Amino acid sequence: MQKFDVLTGIAAPLPILNIDTDMIIPKQYLKTIKRTGLGKGLFSEMRYREDGSENPDFVLNRPAYRKAEILVAGDNFGCGSSREHAPWALLDFGIRCVISTSFADIFYNNCFKNGILPIVVSPDDLKKLMDDAERGANATLTVDLENQVIKGPDGGAVAFDIDPFKKHCLLNGLDDIGLTLEKASEIATFEKNNAVTHPWA
Image (cartoon, rainbow, N blue to C red):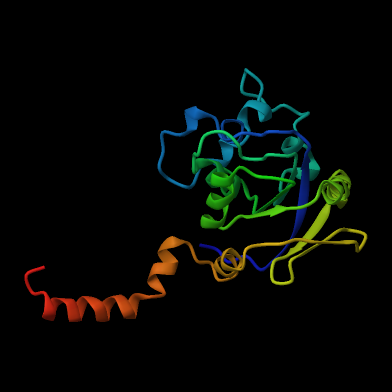
């Protein structure tokens, strides 16, 4: 998993409440178990018209936001079904950070397991960041995970809280497999001893 330390990138405003996982990645894209290639389906029902052409009004189709790496979104982001394809699609598109006032629990935890930083801020701070994100090509935010601060284009700063263990995992690029591999030597020692004491196992 890719480490997350400091991210400076374009922030796209998505001031929609209750964006659920079906909106993030519709069900027709769930046939694959691969984590790549899902970016094309991200927000597809909003990004594309019925004939398959792009909807020019959707934020990620606007020239200034096509390479956005940060989403500033409305309340209760990631609600709905617990599909892990949702963070996969965000990551495959290039989104590394989502900022909102609240997240659905399962989506929130899935983000950390896939190298995405979900940040919870107050409604007042979200309004400031949404205003920053609406600047188009100048909508650049810097997210500093180590120091737990978001810096805006005018130098303003918003602090955020995060669970220390989740922070450690992102800073070091550790998903569940990575955490297990950190204990590889202890596991090998246990297996060796267990083979001696329990040869029938």
